[in-house]
Length: 414
Image 1 (cartoon, rainbow, N blue to C red):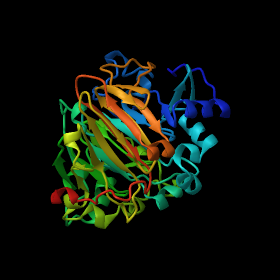
Image 2: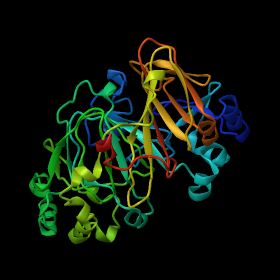
Image 3: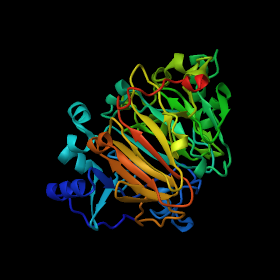
């Protein structure tokens, strides 16, 4: 069922929200179902609400943050995937705020180049693994009027007390795999399990670590709750015909492929970045561990890089994890706008309350998520822990926002 909202998207009202929050906007929870997956039930949604959108829509297994991107779901609500801003009991979408006030929200650099907030993040939470799949490149997605989708993973310890059914992720293809082997697996789609995982390797997932995943690289995400900063797109192609005994429709393989190639096995194989998939040093090229931004533990807080690195020499997104100890306070300056979600504790961001809830009803409002404009980030946000446990927040940034971010592999030099 759609969430009932009192909408006010006038430019003056949006501006009042920005000014009242000193450049910080309060966001409401954005829930997204997937009809072909089983919810892992660890993202704090009430147990009775995982099918609140209807059993025909599938269970809710994702929560999106700072999103101006629509979910590419069948039978979806018109605003599915879009984040809403809450101010004085009324709401408007973050997308409308960015479209109306542009650089005042995301900064002139991003607005002038993209005319939108080009990234988003999510919690991804499933009972088991999902099919081996890829996300198209910018060039491939453009053929169907979409954008490509590089993405990244971080596994928050606060949400991963239990690993569920399969806390391992298959990445890429084993070195030596041939294109003909992949083509043959696609040709066996309707014979049951097409065996694509026989050509890949699984890596055990560890809470508190992450991965950087370029477009056109196969991956079958495992069952840890995942924080996923990524490009603002929902394109994908499933290359596995069955997962945990459940059939994956061919349509999910070709949903973002030009119609004339929907049965073209050679085209589907050529979509893959072959060198990237069979890289014998795959883990070295993509695995991430947190890196402290500075030595600040004695001051009662630690800010850590959790997503970093470049894809084809471009920094498309980054993310940090800020932990503030009870009674401590810090002012953090960043060079770009960001979306923030609180995963533990209670406190404040400037004058806005932050509180990580233990359980959320579908449609209920929370105080755990905000969006910080570029100007507010540059001026510095003061975070204060007002509780008795650590205040822990995850925040993600847009393209080229963090020129001093480390490169993949830098954690080995700590």
